[in-house]
Length: 263
Image 1 (cartoon, helix red, strand yellow):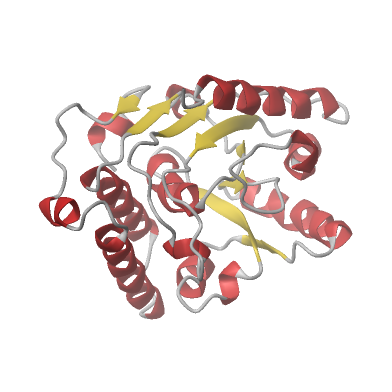
Image 2: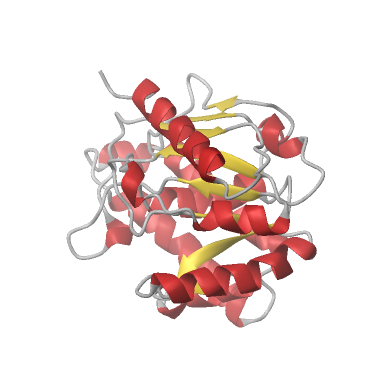
């Protein structure tokens, strides 16, 4: 990832970042961004099938999508990177889930600072385009149809990843939503943190720059007037049942989303 991201506490797309000419010539359609995204997906898929898609490749492909957002008129704002950098042990990242975009660019932001993997739904590791890449990252795979079984899997596999020095990104919402509904934000990650004595880093994302497609959620329209925001909160120690800490995560996300509301 870019040195200005990995070495600083904040990142903001520089003023005057060139808008890719082919994108401007397509009259603000999604065509160029979608084409660039698919190019990265197919290249990553090919490397994964060859068994050579490692952490460096993951960072690079994430960086490519990050850059393509900016080239196609998007503006990205990231804060709180020191909260990751200053951790000496793996952590659990708990984030709201708004679009495909955070799944694609969080690895390029976090992986250079700490080894990381995802908790993902089973459908993603069966998807023809993404399964090889995701499986290469040794994710924790959930069905999202049986909460009790998902809970067992996370508490069984999560400690193993953490012991190996791998941080974990969890989206506690059952699905992607542009609206943040606290009651849908489950406590799975907080319970894992309590069991393993692991700190939590809350993550708030506003990524409605990339919308949902009519035929595919991964190929939706883009809204260049909607800035991308990502904020990493201070690490939280979890004690007892973790109910209080869970509420702190929810409050952090809700406050940031309220701050980022488009006038």
